[in-house]
Length: 533
Image (cartoon, rainbow, N blue to C red):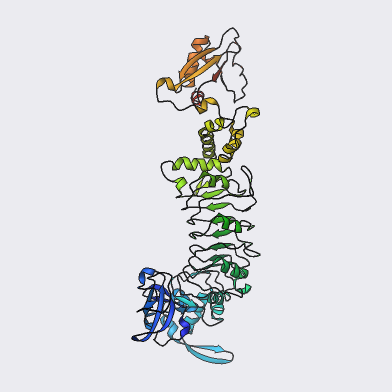
């Protein structure tokens, strides 16, 4: 571009040797002769100053080294939409037969043409396009009105990220010619949004997916423009410095996915402003700096009315360090998928245990950190959690007898699901709560009480056996003690927590022994009784 430019270039986007910038100044910079452009670079490291030169402020930058002065001829102000489209999607140069003379009839008049077949083929090719990417193609404007609609009317998906678009009006001018437009990516275009009149609804009437990452849009501008997005279902607003300042009123009511990642000003109070979007299913809050969450309308063990449709939540790369945050998530009535990678609560040597506790604390969770939570994994996590806090539960007033089970309010606040787990699996027995002993033979013995209901004359026997002993060896021992053939023995397991019925002997001459584990963990007894017979 030459060095004779009008002042309306201020605010436009330019590219210089592959680096993008916004024009902030146009004019002379004494004592050097000629016109200059003052630009603010997207990458501050590319600049040299803050818009000042020899004590005179010509423009202002958001970064002290974000500005430079360049000659206008070095700036690329971009191309229109169709120019970029043709450069990327049209065929290569004409074939030899296309260069031959042809006679075509326009109305009743025969017209001699050269290369007309190539033009028709290329236009047909563009009209069939549905999904296009013009990422990094220096698109800066729509071009002549109506050209896009007549050339490529069937486009429905457009990637215009990393271009030179500078105003939302130019985006609307492109969109209004694409009547089937459903998905639009405008990431990394530093856009000016209209301060007053909303975008005409017709421009984005079919739009379902809109990506505005790193565009500089504010929340107020989002709500203002959203009046023109009546069908929008997915909205991506990453890295815009957004603060949620007001509730969406009569806009974004069909929104299913909202990405607010890397907006460091967002906190729990701002989230409550979007908590009643009726169809919001997925909320992405990675790297927003959030550390706490509390739903004031729901107590421990109850469900909140907020985020009624939310099924998936992403809170990766935040400052979550307290279990109270996870407890609050169990109040979300529809939540079944959670990702909380790289938080203080989930890193370090106890990371695996933390993941198990998260599963136990959120009862309806089916996916954690993009991995399926299988039924057997949930059962193990809940049993481990129940055991891990059993002593604390008992000290706080918990009891195996439901009539005496009165844990303190403080315990229930810290472990809202603990009582539900006790109802699901039974209250923890005293044997489960014993501290793990060192690995010595005497610490690996199970105390078994052995009785024979068919022989009342036999008193109950008590023996200590290794927990690794198989059922077959236990049968051999009982055969010798009770003088009963091994083939006639039928064992049963009794526990205060398991209601069992004495089995009938296989033969009328046989006997029956019922085995009860009295002072060892249930898993130890299960190991003995579940071994091969």
